[in-house]
Length: 113
Image 1 (spheres, helix red, strand yellow):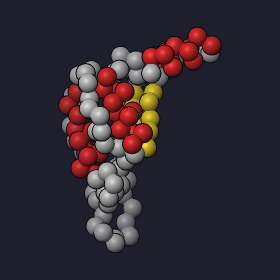
Image 2 (cartoon, one colour):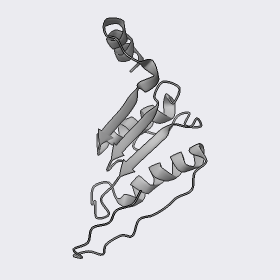
Image 3 (cartoon, helix red, strand yellow):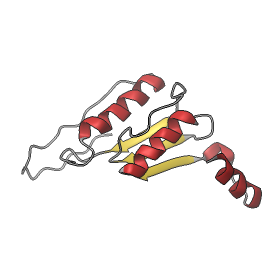
Image 4 (cartoon, helix red, strand yellow):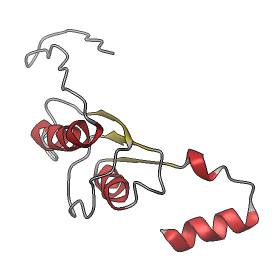
């Protein structure tokens, strides 16, 4: 990843204080790993339906975190997404706030900020 960032930043005007990593599913797992291992290089991470797939080497520095996850995901269960959330809650000194969750088959819309 460092070589990719170096190559891009050598050829383009990049604000290195505004680097973010994002991903979906297994890509979200990779972004989580990057945010853990390289919190000094990334300002934040945004994950969609992710899970910890390859560890969290380092992972003790705060990094901005946003995530969303389907409650009925049968590939990467929501419990795995919550584990990612809980890691960053601890590192960032925050507390969990869960939105109300619909039950299976319920036609409901939830909004939480």
